[in-house]
Image (cartoon, rainbow, N blue to C red):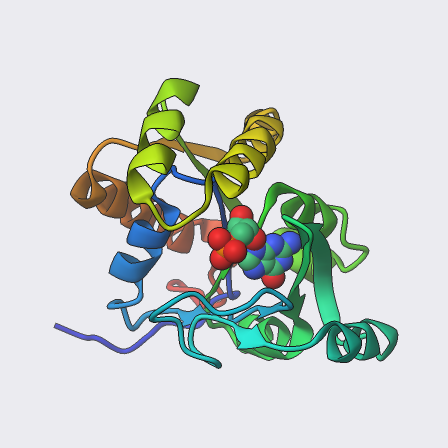
Length: 207
Ligand code: 5GP
């Protein structure tokens, strides 16, 4: 079998989900895949146990984040749960422009900003996926079970989840969460289909 990668336009995959929908599990499963780059965001929130700087996030101070905003380093940024989160241009643009794929895990505000990008190349590269429960009750149950947040934090996350859920129809794909295995298979199927779009291919088999 010929494993040579055929030339095509790169894809910017956006993955969004409300808290508790299973996005971290899906992302962890996807990180085993070697066929795309994962964009590491900057955040001003403190690392959770087990999170590593430069792997899960670039953990930076508010001052440093604001310096980077002023320097135009972000493709998008937003305030989520009272902290800044942002996607660095350096994590995304070169890879996509050279025909590679990048996955960004961002909230609905960030996805809206990238959709509204003035850069036609970015808009053409964009494939946005919303991982969501069949019903909000699934989120309530999962968040309560997780046990990593205080009751106040859970209440804030649920409130934000309800707001984020309102945007589900703005995404090209809505992936309804079932099991981690199914979610992973579903996301990989989307990636595979998008990579086969004729508009992305930069070779001509009949030339
Ligand atoms: P967490 O603190 O649980 O890691 O993430 C909270 C939320 O921030 C999630 O919805 C996540 O997708 C979002 N997020 C993470 N990185 C970024 C980013 O670079 N930009 C935006 N807009 N949201 C982000």
